[in-house]
Image (tube, rainbow, N blue to C red; front, side, top):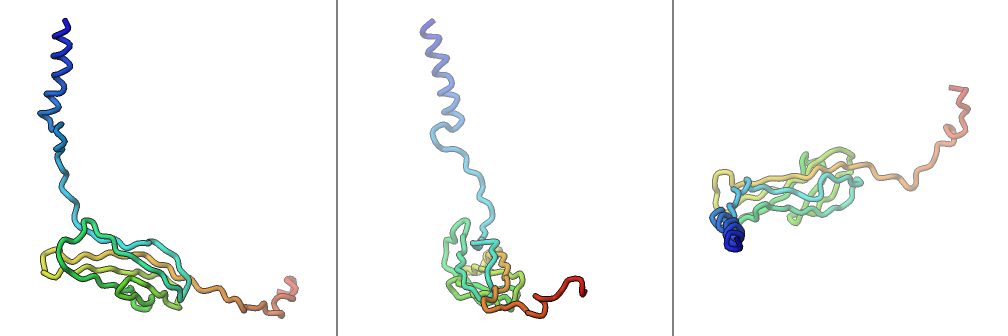
Length: 140
């Protein structure tokens, strides 16, 4: 009876070894490469400065270049390093990162973007209109 327990206990190990229990599990096919831009979404004040980063999955294996842009162009400016200066005009914009490989290939150009909402800056020197502040509501 003891030898039967050993056979039963050993059997799962043999079956698992045949199924790839040696640590070599089947690897799923990687998804298509992409680039994302962080932080996103983000709300910033008009004229403010924000640093963005491009995150690649998987990391590009060959040489290439990363360029930055803002859509529409009236949404502000962005440096080659991803430092964005928001427009003075409130609105919704996108900061775009585009990877172009040095050797052109089908599907080689990757592009990602971050949604940016630019809001007006509060005016510290704003004052109440005294004519409106003292107005009797019944006069309307």
